[in-house]
Length: 539
Image (cartoon, rainbow, N blue to C red):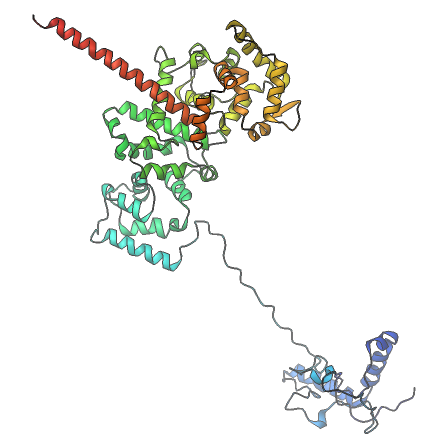
């Protein structure tokens, strides 16, 4: 195809070249057509002069005045790109419709990418990601901060020297929304120099600027109680809180005349807290464990309830009374230590010797007592909580470790039989109809429903509501017989109060029994005193 390329090119822009429309399929079938046209255009003398002029302008820093740009107001016909077709010889355009051709609807928003040899790249847009991690807690919103500062100003108004410890309880309760018995701990946390005063600025710096205002209650309490160099709580961290509770709670006023029992009460509460919440059992209570437990709810309940015995979780004085009296009954020499012979008498000799041996081998839990072969008061608290509420997870772990003789994480048929043999022997001595182990094993499998019937895992035990009864079958004869007889009175009690745990019911029964025994003893002592006086009275 011979063609003469003379005249001026208007532009190499696809819309300004007076070429007939070429379909994409035609370009695919003849890919060299566009290249051939471009080479012919580039060989024209006018094109060479134009390119050199643009290069010189770019080197001199002159703003580019792109010729052939229809949108540029400076574009002129003298600088236009030479046309590839002679004047008047351009092929006719295809018929256009007012709506169908994209060449009509397309709006030219700026210079063509082909009209300028230099292309300016736009800077990438930087997306700002808001801060989502704050090492010391998220700063409070402006409205919340202003509202809190207004309340703080009310409490500290006219107190330029600050508030003393006995005046700080209202701040703890009203502003911090914490239990009132945390006021002393919070006061000392802020008053690091022990001046005896907490100023407004010191409190704002600790509570507001320290971002404690926006933290949840568990994190607030954890931050206030823990020592600066630790990331966990220990038992000693709870003692100041319990001391203030004993000093201020109306339900514990009667203990103020007996400091030794105040100390025992505080110890018992702390042991119960760590028994249930410190699942790692290492004495280091972490923030995660604190959040997963129900201690914060119990503390708030204790602060609102005047009758401390209604706070069944951790703080009930009746529960402490039962634990302490049970320990005192077994500790015959009152050296505050218990040996095997003492523990075997627990529950009217309910436990087997084999299970007591496992307890004193310290398999389920290492003793805190420093005397070999002796169990201390803290060890006894863990034992009695595990023994009297086998539905709780700490109890299941405690007794599972006892039965798992080889410590491989599963309880086998032989391990169960080892403990049940003594139970069987005791039933025979008591003239009870013995139940063969094979029958018991079938019953246990039905009760637990393990994934594999050849052994039992801790996961199997946790999944069943009858796991506690299984342990009773193996080593607690009294509870085993009670389970077999199914006392309808106890069953009705459980249905009437489904929120009470096995420990709650046990503690309630024992407290009534112990209090009745004490009343009888006091009455007998009183009658003796009256009798003695009558003997001494003159006739």
